[in-house]
Image 1 (tube, rainbow, N blue to C red):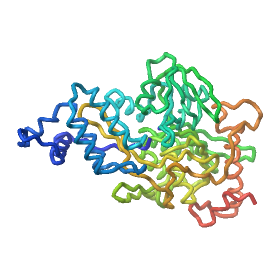
Image 2: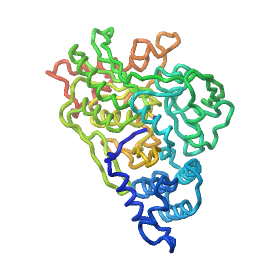
Image 3: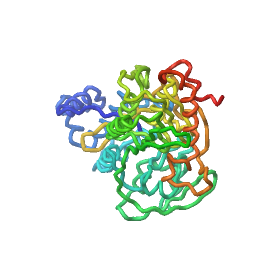
Image 4: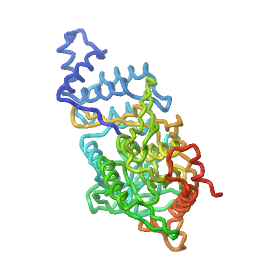
Length: 447
């Protein structure tokens, strides 16, 4: 799933937006020279939505692909507004064609129904099969970012980096993400058949669509064989409720005075940027959390505020499905030497999208910035390499399932426990564990 920021939309925003559209209007008929007549060309018509999308890209779009040319973008506008559109469906298709020239899978147009469903998704509910996807920029394949735990996609065994080759027999090669979503989504209880490619092997899966309210945070106290107590927190998604749920979990676990924490963001596809920053501040007392750069090179640096809820040692569990906001949290913990990362390299999605409502109830997600880890690392397409790399497998030899996550059957979790136990032993003669300390490397030392 995306990093999302929501712009404030005061009551007079549409009026201000229309005034801005007029200031950029470049197709003026001699018979329509008065501002009122120019305004009437696009107001309350499909062209108004099209021009609003064009203006947003012109003002705010950050090009990460090298495909955006401002001169060409003006040509696109002239052509777009010179055409006749009998209805909104024609305008919507033209908008998608316009945006496809950017070759940015994260900048996309959403019709009113799709836009409403997306807002429901970020609020903590998912409709369909519980899968988040993107388009591979190299070959236009439909790529799974991650299935959401507890959903039909997760239960069917779909994994991060899987390629969706077909949906109900329709090949997806070259499809827009909107058309893919249309094919996957449907009424609750109906079936959808996916053709999946994984490691050059092709297979088919039949899934039953469902509407699932996701419990974002799961937490408990685990006791290790060494006698240590670990606060285990599984963070499934950075939804609108995630920071609140995380705070509640940490406060509750702190009452039990655990020796350390293991925070699990494996398979977490991301979500809201502000949620990742808030949660990072619950774990960090000082240091940069993330910095963002817009197309103008403006850097917005977000920092810890000295009000962390715990100072206990931390291990973060990551994998190929840990993306976007998960990578912001992981990068902040790793670069500030606040904790260690264990598992597999993360997905590598380092772009920030802003969600913009449009005048007809449709919406636009537009790439407005890229984020850098505290050390200034751009992880887009590269991911974050954990301090200790380990495969996920059942160490008991039995078939592994979701209920085994965060237990002694979970190989990555077991490595996290062992690493934290070593850290605790090396600091046992000190009065307290000191996060962010210069000798933090002892946390990942096996000696």
